[in-house]
Picture 1 (tube, protein in one colour):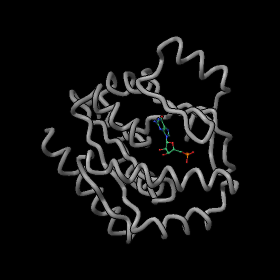
Picture 2 (spheres, helix red, strand yellow):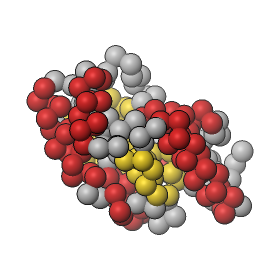
Picture 3 (cartoon, rainbow, N blue to C red):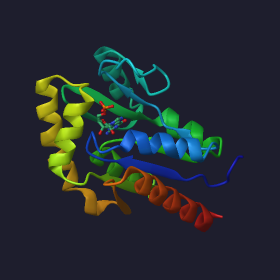
Picture 4 (cartoon, rainbow, N blue to C red):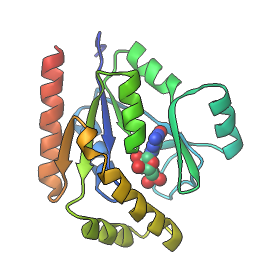
Length: 191
Ligand code: 5GP
C-alpha cells in the first residue's frame, strides 16, 4: 500500500538487547513495512545476507560514499563504519513505504534531525549485567570486540531519554507486544 506520508520507525539499543529480534518481529507483523538496509564495513556474520541485513562493503567504498555525500548519517565504531544511505530512505519515502531502521543512538538522533516526524524507539536491556551475559552467550564477537561493545552499551544507555519511547526488554514477548502497540497507535494518528 502506497502511503502519502509514510512513517519512519527508528530502533536503537545497546547490542545484545534483543533489538534485532524485535525489529524482525515488527517486519513480520507489518508485512507492508520495509527495512532500511545500512552499509557497513564490518564482516558478515554467517547468519547474515548481503543486501538483506546490510550492504557489506569495503572501507574504500564506504569512504567514497562519505565523500560523495551519500549518507544521511554514518558512525564509526568497533573499528567499523556503519551508515544510512540517503538512497534507501528517499526510495522508501517516494514509494510511500513505512520504514524501519536499526541504528545506534547517535544515528537515530541524526535521522530525527533530518526527518523530525521519525519515531525513535529505544529498546532497553533489563540491566548491564544481563546485557553482558547475553553478549557472552551470543558468542559472535572476539573478546576485544565484546569489551568495546559493553563500554558502548553504557554510553548508549545514557541517551535513552532523548527517544520518543523506551521499551524495556526484560520479557521479550511483552516487549514485542509493546512495540506493536506503539506502531499501531502511531499509524492510527498518521491516518
Ligand atoms: P552490529 O555490528 O551488531 O550489526 O551493529 C552494531 C551497531 O551499529 C548497532 O548498534 C547497530 O544498530 C548500529 N548500526 C547499524 N547500522 C547503522 C547505521 O546505518 N548507522 C548507525 N549510526 N548505526 C548503525
